[in-house]
Length: 165
Figure (cartoon, rainbow, N blue to C red):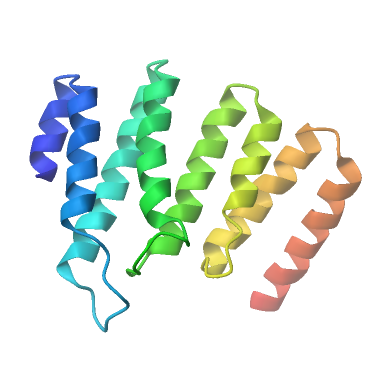
């Protein structure tokens, strides 16, 4: 199914791709937390990576609305309120929020980019994803002219990095 999705994307059949994404998610719903990595988790992880790659490519081609549609699919099934759990779900959500923020930054929509990063601050986000989101938030706050907040966040980020070290 993922190979067909890639072929449809190369053929610029974007609406067909989005329908296939929905069908794949529907056919592989995340189950309650289990030991090990169930097969549907692998499919959902690969699907998220593929959708994010498609979204970035579409963004580069100036097709921001279509890029948003692909990002939205990933954000919907990886959000903390979506049913079921699978390994990597929260990290995928955080990284996808970061990619959306990058695209918004490139468009000069700094406040929306900051909002996107703030969405990734779920309690279950792994520390590496949280640190990257905080670093990017610091950069956005500086860009928005909120220097005091940027310095405060940057200082707390440095303290946390020194603790980890």
